[in-house]
Image (tube, rainbow, N blue to C red; front, side):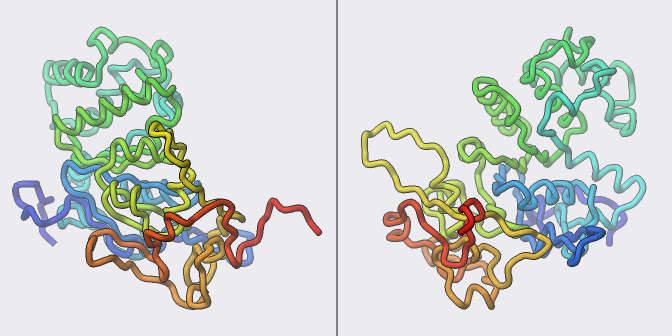
Length: 361
């Protein structure tokens, strides 16, 4: 491995900014029969420079664990992470410190993620106390702080205020400015607008779009809100029980889902019919997501899938695509067809599912 961390100019354009292959992360849970919880199971994904990858899925599917692993807050058990060809887990000392500048985080809760005992200016400039060579003089730091306050829509005079003096949307702008302080190439956004009012959500999302166009930063956007993901993402990855079951462009995944789970997610998303056409059908899944401590054999979605057959219980599906859309992949033995999407109604009961909400007989 080279001693120097790779820079954008030193890497061929064909190398993705972030490339993840076979990423697996297990947690040991004491006091349980099967005490291994597989949070991530052979995850593959890539992110290009200036691109937004939307990451969606139910609570507990592994989205936040994936984010923490990409930020090197968790050590993977298997697989590789390459940042423009460099393995960050192989870096040490100054090389690792230099790499950490390039991947930053915006947290979900704008109230809990800011230190109430610090001013906005201190919060934004705190990373420079560690990365001292980035803005070495007091004058340079002050100028950069004013610039960051301006580009996120805050006044330079707000730098002396404490977080309690800001609204929720303004606090999230401070969090975004803090993430931008080290000039990153990738920002992981974990539900960045879920705690905000609807009108404020739109303002923050528009800010993120403007910053991406201006700075060329890439986003990994984690969200439960499919309408938000459709608004901001270039590509979408759908997670279920520790696996990415479908990937494709935003248009492909939302308009032509190939995995039954994705189709169910999309049908559950609120939809305003302004044309007066016949309301679309909804796919209603029964049962709950299985425990990651004891996932189903074969296809992990089979216990809730109305298309499941015997092969789904014995053989795990691999990613497949159609000739028309080779980059739109889904891990399913029986992918959704156009006729499936037209005929799916409600309710649909999976063959092997157990309705945990049904009364006992």
